[in-house]
Length: 312
Image (cartoon, rainbow, N blue to C red; front, side, top):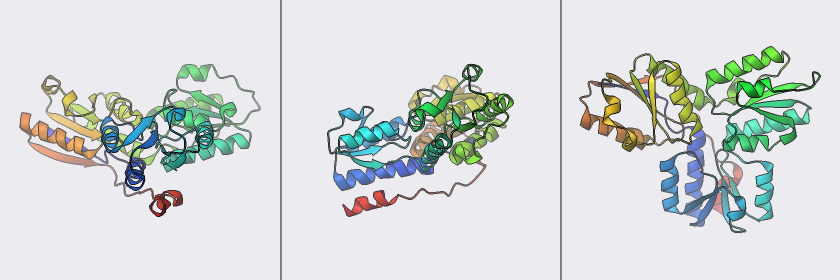
């Protein structure tokens, strides 16, 4: 079996930053600390942080008043921020800067009188946060049916924003259809879909050119990991999303001559390495090669309030 590793894969800058924030807070303030929602969508990351004393909750009202609380990388709505302030929570914001950018654009477009078409998945926590910035000015477009049901005044200016972890190809197709119906629509900037999402999807397309099967390491609730598997299947290649090697059956590798491996932006690299060790124990591996489409050197620094954690 030949094995091909995607590059880049695994942690993106926003995920690495968010996890560092939780670890830094645990070290400084001592457990327990609270995190509103899972800090990132990965079973292993959340499990490890729970062991260290992080408590993950979705309902802000369940957090004791005055305690240290971290907002997850996915961002929160103004309503959540107000409710946190009412409980006098000591907030540390781990929202990914690229998500914050979309929030800022939503507020600006709403202020300028636009109606915003937000492309994304209805139940995803990132969408909940973005829609909360301007609920009366945003319509979620998840499917073609949502687009067909749109009824907006002809004179109303329209702008498009997107969930950062969508599949690039799907987003382009939806934007094309929206533009056909609303020719004057303001299209999203290319960088609104995060560079990590784009890079990982490009790498999967390259894997698909040479692989019989592509394994995507990531949790089932990870949007970007699911999109990677979907991108592979769209290229005509079978793909499996697995949290770790325990979810992989030997029968699923029967007849596979070229195996591709990638990992979602919230998946730790040690899971990939464990998978490679397991494969080496069960299959004669002729070669392990890396297929690289880009080099990610971006790092998101801690903002002033986070840097000041060490000074408290």
